[in-house]
Amino acid sequence: RSGSKHASTPADNYYLARRRTLQVVVSSLLTEAGFESAEKAAVETLTEMLQSYISEIGRSAKSYCEHTARTQPTLSDIVVTLVEMGFNVETLPAYAKRSQRMVITAPPVTNQPVTPKALTAGQNKPHPSHIPGHFPEFPDPHTYIKTPTYREPVSDYQVLREKAASQRRDVERALTRFMAKTGETQSLFKDDVSTFPLIAARPFTVPYLTALLPSELEMQQMEETDSSEQDDQTDTENLPLHMSTDDSGPEKENASVLQQNSSLSGSRNGEENVIDNPYLRPVKKPKIRRKK
Amino acid sequence: AVPVSAAVAAAPPEGAMSNGVYVPASAANGDVKPVVSTTPLVDFLMQLEDYTPTIPDAVTGYYLNRAGFEASDPRIIRLISLAAQKFISDIANDALQHCKMKGTASGSSRSKSKDKKYTLTMEDLTPALAEYGINVKKPHYFT
Image (cartoon, chains in turn green, cyan):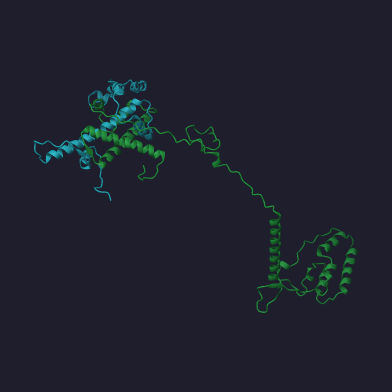
């Protein structure tokens, strides 16, 4: 029972309608007794008592009935209940025949609100077999079915070219900034070093060296394809031959690296012996042992 | 009426039977009188169709269903509603007596009888209910 004036559910309305009927009944009984008017609190009290009296009779009669292993309450159950509640049953027939009797009309039965045809969409899912028929129906299918939609990708030539160009520019910018932050930089402005860093230009003394020297991967492949030690020796001999013609100042570690048959990418950073930047260290490939 | 009579006939064969109610042996001596006998009520139930109680069957049935009571016979519902009505009527009559007593106790003149307009107030209802063992305490004012 809600005391608020807000919209109540059909169940609340159902309850309130019957409660009002009880109030009307109480009022009629008071009129029969001879009262002209009554206080609201008194009527409320009697209504509450009437409701709980009926409920108690129902509950108690049911209990008595079930106490004797039956399910359908009979007259005897009710008589016993009334006796237990202190009601004098013998006076009941006399009371029934009293002269002034009033009949109150029952509250109207309202049907369940049916959604109009215009608002229904689609066929409701029928009840599975385990659900009783008097339960409400399933909601409209559009409330729980979802179909995913795909947005067509943009295929306009101009838009695509613009996108490709801006992406390329962003990638270049990011890469150059990265190299500037991790490597050596030159700055255009004397005072401001960090604003526009340029990647330092360190020209190789022998620019064509990198083109002539085989890369590490090629070195390994050459190792594997050669089946004899002689081939290995010729390889190692060939390389120092090339090396001897070069200016070995900045590349002295190259020879040592070559003789050890280890990585060659030390030629890129001519000045530094140890590369402390982890991103610039050469890739260590696992050595493939050739079974002899 | 079949279930009614069947329940009454289910009494065990031993012991004295009077008015269709099983009376234990001790009661036959006269120590305990059987208070209730269902026979007149069975007859009454048949006549109940003529007397429609004030409370509609739908309302009584609604409250009985809420309590778990499923009535097989609609006349049973009428019996219960009648009993509940009588309950309230008795209280109302007692309250009327209180009201009348208060009116005449102050010694009003005999020529003019107590005015016919009786108003049920909480002051009359409370002592009437107290006789039934129901104590109500309502605040005098509501803030």
